[in-house]
Image 1 (cartoon, helix red, strand yellow):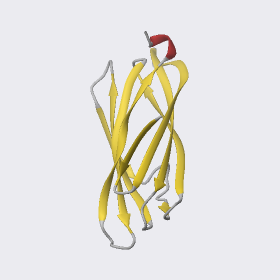
Image 2: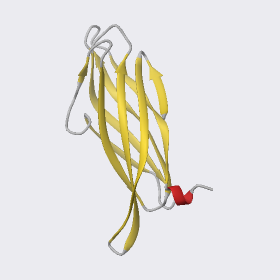
Image 3: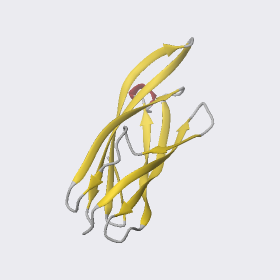
Image 4: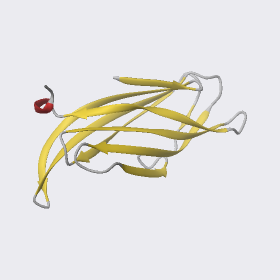
Length: 128
């Protein structure tokens, strides 16, 4: 598990290898990840946007920005958490992702970034 805490917001990531498949005559490697965002602060926060840098051993880095996560902009109260799962397709059996969430503190109206730790993908057969 990969974990990072920024301004009282704890982000934990668990990854899984989902398998391989052919798409457009090329092999692809499917990875899943589950992220838990815990609010350890005293203020309610809302996740409003995300930024991802995706590293694939066989391709250039890809950057993705978007609103919320999985179509939602969750409000996370103090002491509560939000968990969601998603996935990533790579051309290589080895890669990684990192990024940040854009959050708003409901008490201060402050907008701030919460770091998502770098988490690695590796198909079991690719690990030496």
